[in-house]
Length: 247
Image (cartoon, rainbow, N blue to C red; front, side, top):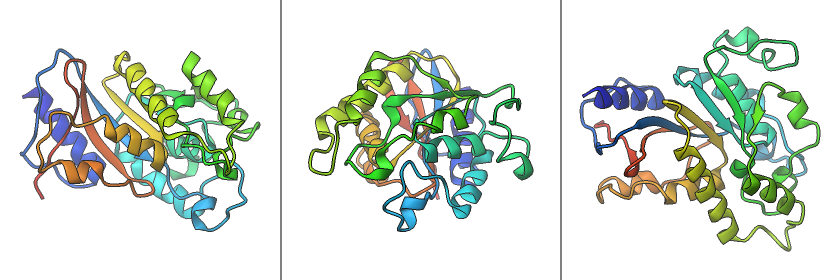
């Protein structure tokens, strides 16, 4: 019942709606709430195809601020600027006036939220300018701890070789997603936001919902909208289970 209450609350937060009582649950020794979040609108989403590691637009920043309704004790973001910026704004509990400032050097982040950046969450690389990570991006978000990961280091090195003529192979991107889920399963944060990109989130979804019925599969597999969050329960025995909420 405690898990049911937590899942209902998480789903309501992700959807911006009051919780309803229909849930799909699985037994587990440890259950964490995982929000999968696609970054908010960035410059390349509105036609700026030349933008390298683009920042959010004004509309994107407003959309990220709407994600402050999510209650988390950790956020793990892609190292690309649009994901870090979405995560920073969403996890700032100080209000809109502080949204653009607290993660800069010398400021203090909200004390209850751990801020992480994981290279495995970067976008599937098609060799576009927006797929790059600019050298100054990490310095702009110094409060995010970079997760030390051999797979993440390898992914960062491999990203430099991808071009439009030689994009990241689908199998390699899928392996990144699987490696990230394996890492996440070892963490003990109770409520985690994972902020990434449309292509990578689709690969993460492919590993979700092993124990869901046909009724839930179409919604589970649908693409993420910009700035969208979906709530899941991740268990250490049965993988990930989507929360079902009646309309």
